[in-house]
Length: 297
Image 1 (cartoon, rainbow, N blue to C red):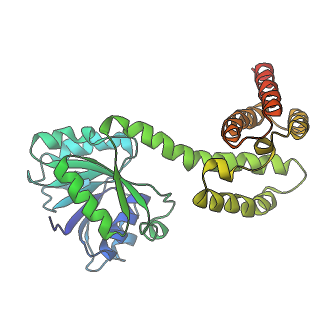
Image 2: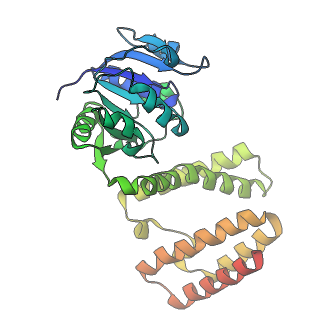
Image 3: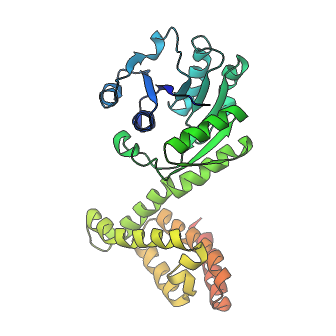
């Protein structure tokens, strides 16, 4: 199925990035549609040739694009889907880009004969213009009807990305994994920056100091398994270093930060068990972690 015409509803970071990326991939972006006057739609439209129409969602009378993307926030998707049943032809392909919702949220469109699915780009998009450059080489989670999934996979290939599929029932678990790998990673690094800042360094300096370490760890993970890439105190089952860490954490950081360190230490020991080392020391650290957790409750 060689479909080319696209309309996008929702001009946030993902919607803008898709508009630019799909345009560069040869698709015709017919309409950029927003629900609020606070929008970057005009800025995106002027970067696309030929420029798409910029429309207000509530004013829509009909929408004839072959493919429609709903890139709005999750709570708005169902209402947009219901509204689209009155303005799109029955053979339209409609996708949303939510990571945690499945295509079932578009059931009203499915009921009138549309092919529905979800396409979630598994990258961090913090800016539309930068995000449009990240699709090449990225993985996209594809889910939906058989025909919708086929179109989605073709679309991802044209973006020079890679698609994979999961069962609809696992969509929220998939998204929880993605949040852990991205959003929680930011939270973890923020915690590490805060800890280093307690040593008398500015936050910006602390981040600058830690970034090469973080990048080298990611590079190791790209080439190795978690077991191979794990380094440091827990990989070595260094009980003396752990005791020093724990004492310093008790004196200098919040209870929340201390709990984060302990929980991740527990997980690190699980990983380290697969590489051998001192089982006795690992068990001593695990017991110390368990005791420290009880004290912090």
